[in-house]
Length: 139
Image (cartoon, rainbow, N blue to C red; front, side):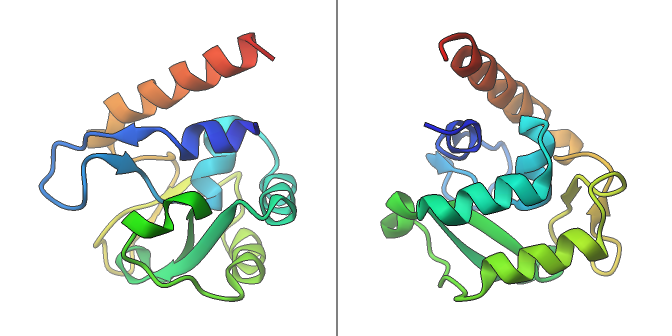
């Protein structure tokens, strides 16, 4: 199992009313790389090579490529974009990881964030860090 797979498989219970609260979250490569603390290009290559992920361009976050585990396709409502990995490479260049760690939902033109998650997702982020710590302790 990969570190990014651990966080991408953890279901969340978001307090806001949008989305299915009983499924893992879809995430940008910026968020994934920020949470696991690794180079986004390395993580993206690993994700692509593994053939475990699908991606699409999410209109809610300015069209950023967003990824989820292929095994969850049946409960995701988004149609995968064939070139999501190439688009994600472009986004890493356009939005360098040292400045952008994530993207806000429904934020119009100001959607890039210097943190991986919105502040209301703080509990979810803590859960991900805990799962990641447990995984790394057992590797």
